[in-house]
Length: 376
Image 1 (spheres, helix red, strand yellow):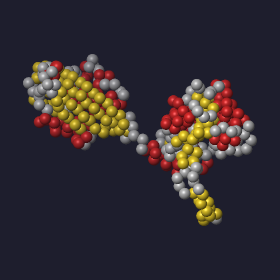
Image 2 (cartoon, rainbow, N blue to C red):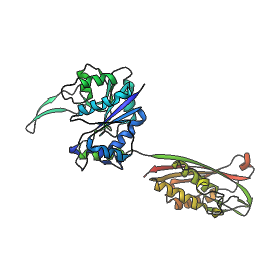
Image 3 (tube, one colour):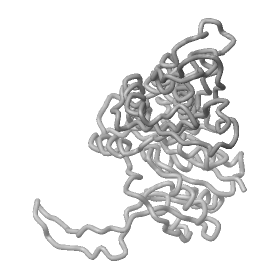
């Protein structure tokens, strides 16, 4: 089954203000129509963008690839009809018709509309009217209206492709939306649940509302790190930035701080950016004997550069000896200083392996760490 989408973007949107139509203005760091396109793309096979002739170069500048582009008409109906006719070459089974100025539509709404088309020739999202309704005259309330059965329409509005194409071809009077066109042609339209978040940007204030809604989006990343170092000759070990006296030392290309290595890899993991070995290859002599704080600081800086802040870190050291408890406060303080975090956001703890395995035989120390990053 082939599902197409039409993004209606030919309007001028003057009520929103600005030097360009609302769909070409930026919402946060991205153009409105770009957000809309990227939201629909994963759910459909074909996208047709309907543009005003003056906006073609703006579309090309975005670097997005639509399957086809149609030129808009004098009315929304004419623009949608142009998009439907452009899609005829692809023979889709279903089509979603969506306003470019609704960039915050959810995947759930899109899936619900598509799913409803399995049993209906038309489907659209809507919100039941819950506020009291008045009529007015000369600035005063002239009456009330019953809100029972009233809904606020949203998009995308989905249809059987051939049915809505024929409906638009035979539409002779202006229609409020594509549902109105469908109903005029006798097509039954199912209602699926809409969402307040799926607002249509119309005025300057709507940009503020959309920006506030985006502000509630949290990008939270969790990464895990694991490291092991064996014991060798020496009289101390470096653990989580603290020099701990011990009868042997951990062996490694750097200072072999197994705890800090695990924390560093947890941050790289949350970012999806590999591990210490990729950023600081052990084959590179410049890192021989390097302090592990260099690696950790690099990982934290990478997080910052990508818009993230380390929220908290939890590190578990697995060993029989040395005993970690007496050094735990200093370890937390050392990690906090490197990552510029409150010490209460860092956990360092230890466990034994009940004398099992290489840690139980006191051949080395293992460390496991988890880091949480939050988009700042």
